[in-house]
Length: 144
Image (tube, rainbow, N blue to C red; front, side, top):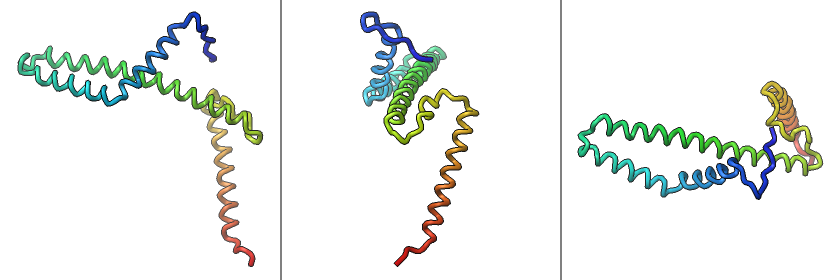
């Protein structure tokens, strides 16, 4: 499915989310985010005696980490999807630009698993044939 074209005068929710996801993943992957998480955890642990280690006190960290984990999983998935799409587009451009490359390889990520399995088997046969040719040429002593 091709995404709709983005009108620069009227950015959509997807554009805003993409920008947010990019910035958030950059920040959450930084040293400062790790330090902030450590400070929050130490603050929570230090407050244990104040709240007598109550169930509500433990519930706060449990709920917080569950929500943060869900948020991070969604953020990571979005980042991975964008990265995969960008890599596939770059590979498609390389395939298109190289004269000897088979253009049938463009957009193969849209094939079914069965079609990908058949294609993989074809390339495994090519690799096996190449390996056998290499083994034969290495056994032949060079002419003097």
